[in-house]
Image (tube, rainbow, N blue to C red; front, side, top):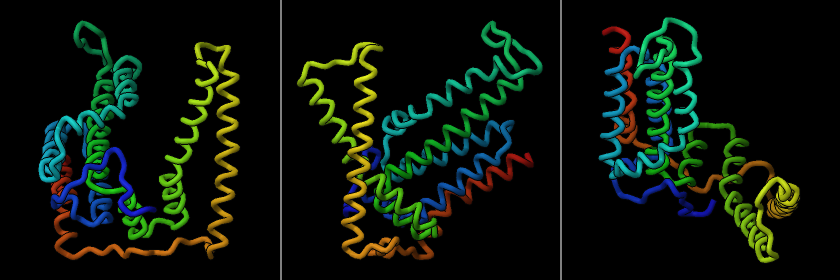
Length: 253
């Protein structure tokens, strides 16, 4: 993992959120999401408080609302699924905007939308304030199985490489006058996908042989040891602790 390897979601900054160790932020986001998911769907006010907590984190991290909202587009498939629930879930019926919809379906749609949006927003904030390399180091620090960490690191490193290979193949097709315009051209695209798979597989074999020749035995050396102080853990714990308080109130109020 090359130093300084960033991704499109990451926004460079020197804020307190950026400065937190990655494993602290990963643990905080995970605990926050667990608290959100555990909250009863009927406690509508609780989800408003969760959104306010995330807005506070975004403000401290200097992540603009526009940037955050644009990245929430990734949850569109879940939104489409949620919008169908009032029409397909059986149960008591009511009228909404002149349409007959299911009451359990409405609650189900609200549950999916509210919890899904909050979870995605928390993930976007994490990605916006943490580099990919740091995220992997954080996962390593949290004792995630080393094999999974290695697979993730290789995916990150070689995803761009394979993407570049696909672009070169696309340019080669266009330079020969090819444009996919219908079903007739699916065969060519399928052959392209097959060629890309073979090239990627062969590249992976060459990379593995190069790693073995340099002493790779199945584990990657830990070059940077990521640590956190009690103060940093306390700062990271502020979000999940407040979320836990809201969750408990949601069950009791």
